[in-house]
Image 1 (cartoon, rainbow, N blue to C red):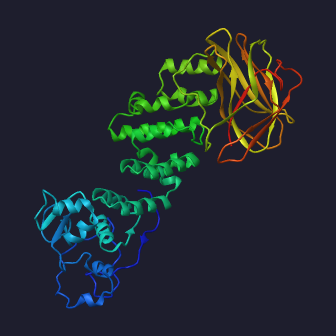
Image 2 (tube, rainbow, N blue to C red):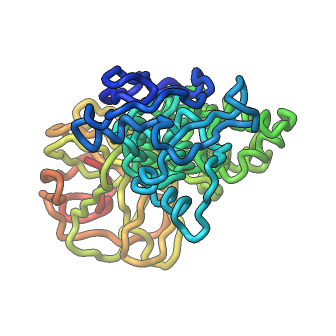
Image 3 (cartoon, helix red, strand yellow):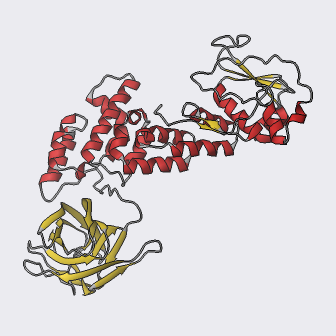
Length: 482
């Protein structure tokens, strides 16, 4: 298990294992806990008088034979007396346990209540069970990196949600990129959605560090798919593919399968379809996936055609960019009305714009055909106007249904737009006449309840332009994150 940090140690509560007023020992860990022997001692006379509160009196009874009426036998084997490797016996009090846990209440007082003086719990770690009892007797929390997972399991098993919450809080405080995948697996196993969400956020922000950690190759296939489905991973797709291949090799070893291309493909299963090969450059694809043996020859050829020819053949892989962004997607439309018949001759439609705050543009909304369902080829670009520098572009295509709606065309990666600089949005379409916008707005304001206003200003772009201007033309929508 990846290191989580130092243990959380609450106020020491004196127990029966120490003389009155003496500090109790630290909680045992799974690695160092020795057998717990029955405590042989004479009853203490008038011990109650030394405890000023109910909490102190109950805490004194923790892990004590004094007044106990049940023992729990933990660990494997059924030898006697706590010999090395044998069971460990922990004394307890039915009333205290039943008052703190509905599971214990049913165990002792329900319709099928046990009357046995010894109860075997072979699936519970002694250190975790002691942490549970300590909490029930005294409200004291003592968990550490070595015991937190088993304590969380035990708290869930015996329905003690307050201790569950302390365990999740401990894990959250010690969440890092190098243990995020390990904790994500545990969060999904124990059905802790809040912890799982925090793990995914950490993976989003530090994807390269997270997938490079040892715990990544230990996750199960469902966790792998849950991560690959995310749009917010901050990593190049070729590097993500390399990590997925490492996971497949580890999974082959776990299943004791020969390390063949076919077996790697087999263990990946549905996860392979979640790799977004169209987001790679042709060089990245040629150097990695094309030579990996995991894709079929037909898939490799189709993807090469997707990179190199127009019209592009359809591929079965997602081409939606991984935005690496937080928050909600935003969109502005600069036209108030839609008309028919905008023609194309190989020249770009262009519009200049500035914005009042830093944003990341992920795509455009474009108009489609007036002649019914049609496929278009398109190249989209964003250029920093003064430097004439292309910040991002994508050669792609889109299908329209013949309506006056807009159709999304996305960049492979988000493009950062800085406030008060002039940029030029370009779209070069190849296809039949389309709808176009009119009654354009020079200023468009986007408002959300939780964010400040995002204000766009548009300017016509002189020179080699297919006709788009402030007043009418193409590129009606800009899709962005703030």
